[in-house]
Length: 333
Ligand code: ADP
Image (cartoon, rainbow, N blue to C red; front, top):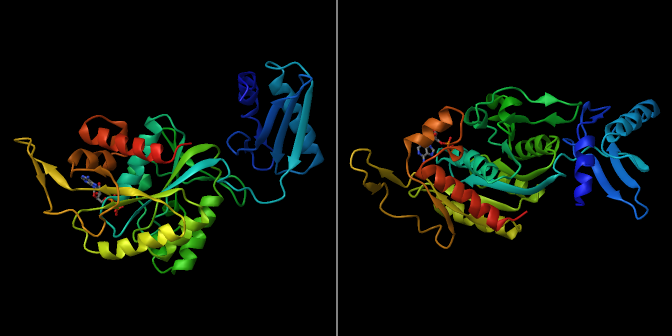
């Protein structure tokens, strides 16, 4: 983008969409902005509102906002959006984090992958789609309810710059337990699409455990860019996981690789490292190892404190940031 456009974009972004009553930058409604050959400035902004009065007031607000940074001719195109907003429009990459079973550390890895990507300088969001056992609000120390912008759109919460939506804050997990696959994937998709994510480099989705129909439907419908699989080395159902990974690949969802979690333990007294299980799984041979993480009390503690370890220091924190680097290298923006 022409660097002269940056202050103009900055001046426009905080303006408020009259219907949704939220910043147009956050809602990703500034669609085009450029200098014409004669030097005039062309700006196209999508609006949900179609009231003439609101449009006039908005035009004035645009002119006022631009006055300190631009004094030339303005061609302002306010475009009425007819369809419901697609909250994912400004998201560049969707990364899924899945596991064969619950309890292997999937949510812990998902939040730390998101925090690691953020530490690398990317704009990141995380969705807790583990509808029956939501844990991201605890992991990020952020238990507020998201704000509803209109009847349809939600505004994600923010935990130190990381955007978050948890299905757990919207659906009672006890109720969700009774839901069948199609209802689960339909509801999750609705939440994800109806959230005003704004501009994000990566959106990390903490999937429900398992690699069945719900996960496959979500992956395909969201056109996910890749799946990170989390497992423990002794996970007994890995044969099934292998088969479902083949299904993901058939649906053109690349498997980015495997995170082997809780694979070893470091003795706090002598510092020696013990492998906890005799062998890595053979069922997942051929999958790239993105990270091998030890059982680390610091990781569990950081999670309980709502401050992902990937924001902290130490060997495990480094391994988590390294995982984020590998994912970013596989899915460049
Ligand atoms: P899942 O999402 O697969 O159900 P969680 O991420 O909720 O699993 O992790 C289960 C428990 O294990 C949590 O209490 C978490 O803090 C802990 N945990 C996960 N990975 C590690 C690790 N490498 N070292 C120590 N504790 C861990």
